[in-house]
Length: 126
Length: 126
DNA sequence: CAGAATCCGAGCCGATACTG
DNA sequence: CAGTATCGGCTCGGATTCTG
Picture: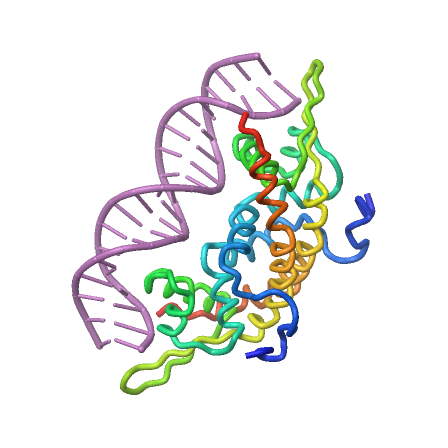
């Protein structure tokens, strides 16, 4: 079947890539990663500045999430020795390139938030 | 800060929408939703057909995931009475419209999978 | 300032068994 | 055929406390 519903471009990758997508979603699909990437899109940020701008994230979770994002190459971490210690986080080139698909997702979410809310209300529990 | 890194389009929605994005990611970012949406992109499918084509998903999880996707309006569920019983799942219009941003995400994942894998290997555990 | 260690609770994933 | 009921196990999120 070439182009189901005429919505999928005939060229391009298979929609049903098992591992590849899962790998990305697993890392970026948690509670905070996308939000942190969004905040770092504004430019490099220090740890506490990030925490304050995000608002309701604990040190613990922010630290772990940043570590995983660094491990996967989305962000770079730079330590500036001194008193007090400074650590700056910024998006890597890969992280920056991720902003494009992220924006499509955000726009879709923005445009469909009411449709989703309405669907949830209309859904009848069986 | 207008257009950080020159990558974000000046117009459009805020990258840091707290609730809106989280709401979408929460529902679609689990282990199976995107995969199921991808499979339904090929056209309407019956329950067992879906399970077989996906392969390693249990009835339980498939059922629950389909319910949530239906609740949020991504898919439609049609019961055809008879012997044996038939239930057909298909993408709703909203579900279909989601395929566009999904494709951008998939393409990005496809293009960057090796970069991610390399970053993970290079990451030194502290 | 920038985390690490520890602990708890909630929720998801998954297998198995049962039902209309 | 298309589910539901039940039960574990495991991971994630979050609060609190401690450290260089």
